[in-house]
Length: 75
Image (tube, rainbow, N blue to C red; front, side, top):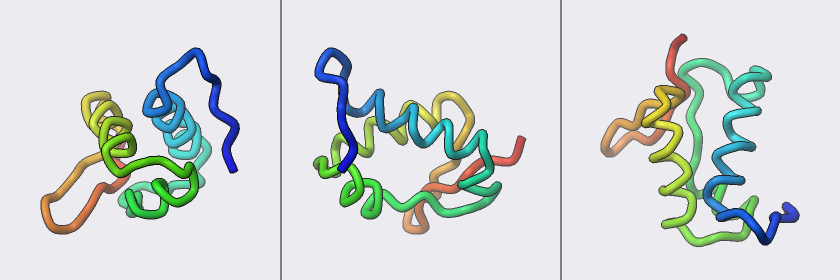
C-alpha cells in the first residue's frame, strides 16, 4: 500500500502520482484512468480520488466524459 505523507492532503499526493505516471507514459494519451482502481490502490474513499482527478482536470492533464470516465488528455 502507498505510504502517505501525513503533512499533505492525500488527494494532492494521489494527483502527484498520477501526474508522474502521465509524464512517464505509464498512462498513455487517451488511456482510461479508473477511479475505482485508484481508490483500491491507495485505500481511500472515492471522494478523495475525485478531488485528485478534479485537480488534474484543472491542469488540463485529463478529460472527464460523463458516463465514460477520465482519460489522459492529448498534449
